[in-house]
Length: 288
Ligand code: NHX
Ligand code: ZN
Image (tube, rainbow, N blue to C red; front, side, top):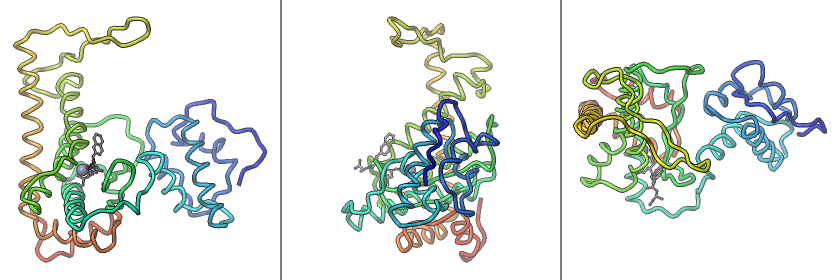
């Protein structure tokens, strides 16, 4: 798979266009290999990280005596580099499996029913890295900026997992910590850096990093206690609203949620098109 040619890993590269060539030239690619799909799923990766990803894919292909790297190995390598290795042997109780399927189904359902989300790439209940299940989205093209409506829909998708858990387990798990962290980061950035809160306006509240001896020791913030309280309230309001939107979508489409969760328990992984098919063909129309 590898030519003796020196690897080109010195520059930053997002594979978005012509610069795909230098890194991938060292690996024999099957016609199925679509590097643009891998590129959209590896935003901000450095050339070295992308070279590592291709290396992983080549090793996977070699292990199966394949003559070239196919899309299957590239996807597996991307998932491993981004989220960690697959842990098929992790012993999960039936209850944990069920809760995971519903959690991921919640993300997937809200994703396909909202208009301004990134398309659903795949959803899986095969454990990987620290996660028991994952819902992966992929932008259609390189994204350079996000509108408020995109961020608000993303927030609702992030809330969908926990809401689905509440329905099936009548209790909630510790597992939504990652989703909660992600949602908080988005909402805080909207208020403090992106000028997307009408209440707090076009002001940067993020403060500036202060360094000492090359290390970040804190942030200088130039706003009052009263403003700090307003920021906290606004972040909470944005998240509460996303939660309420996701909850009403999920409650109005419970039959579809259940159909996705059941399909996940049966097939373990579904791609975006399969989820859309379930949502479209499930009796009745989607209620948004
Ligand atoms: C555990 N892991 O800790 C198990 C092994 C709710 C079905 N007992 O949201 O797997 O519960 O959509 C950043 C910060 C994972 C990232 C905190 C990733 C915490 C993943 C814990 C699904 N999918 N959570 C998800 C999940 C878990 C975790 C994090 C994180 C679950 C959830 C982890
Ligand atoms: Zn989740």
